[in-house]
Image (cartoon, rainbow, N blue to C red; front, side, top):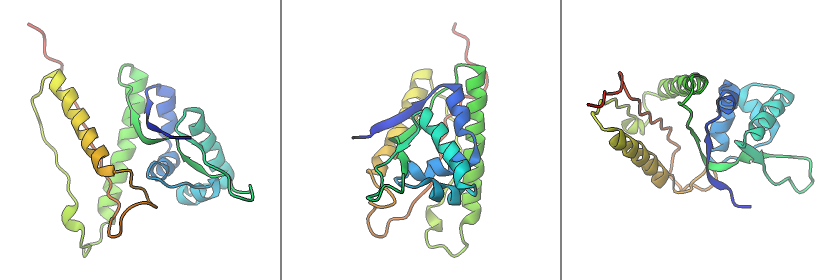
Length: 188
């Protein structure tokens, strides 16, 4: 069965299901191509296998993860991402905004941890970057800008995973954010 290209989450309840730090850690790995058992996910997230099984089933209910093919002996029941990527699109309600902000806060915290984990003598340190800009764009330009950023990341992903990347490749973490500031302009 071919996986979908993208899972789009817009229901605030589904976004809240993503908000747990252990779930986010596992989702990161699964959406980067790993196929893992509940026990492996539990070790990664620092939980018991039974607690992780609960979290995986909750994510499965929202179509975020799915069962992968069982091992030959049927004893291992691994999990995988339900698609190649995951998008959160729920800003239209207060509950959606709060849930999305929780996810963003967790993603930013994890990004800070990743910057802190960089060793001072890492030869790849020159590719680490963080850029913050302010742009004045129309609503349509802002939509197009966000889509182009997303398309650029997808172009560089090239379907590579933890098991299918070329020699010499290293995993990079990216976080793209487009946030309108201030109040919307008044139409005149």
